[in-house]
Length: 369
Image 1: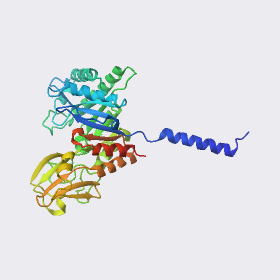
Image 2 (image 1 turned 135 degrees about the vertical axis):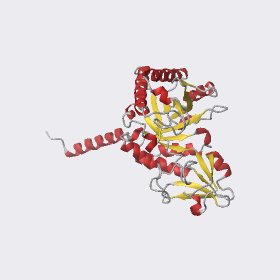
Image 3 (image 1 turned 90 degrees about the vertical axis):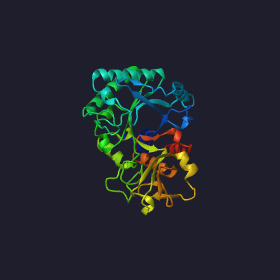
Image 4 (image 1 turned 60 degrees about the vertical axis):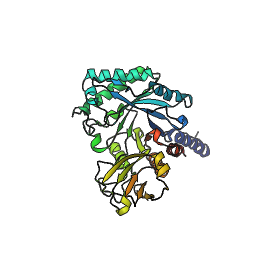
């Protein structure tokens, strides 16, 4: 006997609601890098999904170790934050800019085994939830580290072996995370995408430092899109994400990186409020907390907004100084971009540079319905 249309429509509506609930967007992750300091950082654990402790290093023989300046008690203190958020994951990040010996550690089965054994030993020593590999960058010697064309294949082999080992360590009861930090373009030429993505839980994109001491002009260090004043080959967050998507990396394995600091330029040509102009000196980094305390609203400093790039900059026409940075407005927009494109989430560098505002806006924006 045919089912009545009214009942059929009701069943279809129920099924569609169930399907929608089952296929709704995955929770967007929020990941913070934390460096060691004189004391453990104050960590609002409920706002975070993952903390990456930076950094362990790689010895010449390929083994992973904590530098002497790192206080092991501070790592234990980070892990203790699980008492405030049982779902919080604490991951050990290995490497960082200028950290070498990766090329040697990945070069042979024997060296890879030393790397993996020592990394896993640290994992268990501190009851961590995974490892993050921050090799900047395979096949490149930009940071004056050893490198080889063979890094590309060897890094893949290292990650595959490490993934297999972590799965064995978990014994089907616990999933240990394996992630990397990466950048697009020539910085990613030493990565076998998407093959390595199969071994990784996600990739943290370093979508910042687009402008600094090595670029010919000032510019946005972390623009979302290309500024109207920027050249056609300008690096942007959107461009980096497209690069990894086009290479076959699943969208939900891509985390957009944001800076909790600004970059400073001096002796800047005064046209266009200093934006995309030549500069005579590079003033290094300035953390967000210092920007709030001594620049925003201070005499002589003007805040400008780039409607195309969707980020602010500060300009002092008297001293001809420029600061490129992210603020609550631009971070909320980036969180919206992540959600619209169903990416994995947002990663930030670095926790101690915030005054609480930036993390708060990211947490609210990523979890808003």
